[in-house]
Length: 107
Image (cartoon, rainbow, N blue to C red; front, side, top):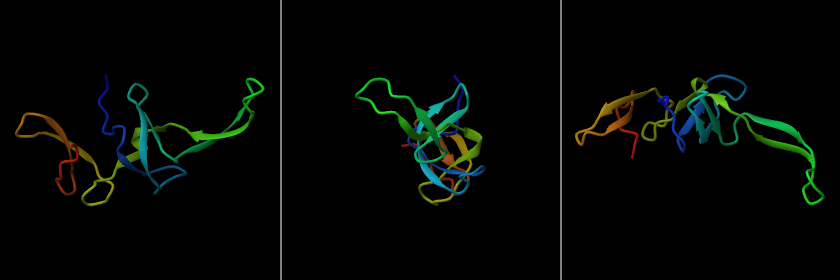
C-alpha cells in the first residue's frame, strides 16, 4: 500500500490546472494510481445512455480524479495550503503536522 499525504475528508486546495486556487473536500483517494477525487472540483460532463425506460439519458456532470500532486492540504489552524510532515507523538502514534505552524493535523 502506498502512503499518501492526503486522506479522505481532508480540506485541500488545487495548486495547478484549470481549477487552480479552488478549495474542496476529498471524497475518495486511490493510492495505487496516486489520484484523489475532490468535491465540486474537476467537473466533467459525460453523455449517459438510458439503460431502461425509468432511467433517463442525457448529460451527467461528475467529479473526475486529479493527481494528488496537484492538491495541497489546507491547515485547519493557519488556513493556508501547506506541506505535510509526519512525526511520532508522545503516545507513540504516527501523526501528520503542518510544516508552517507545526500544528498536529490528525485527530
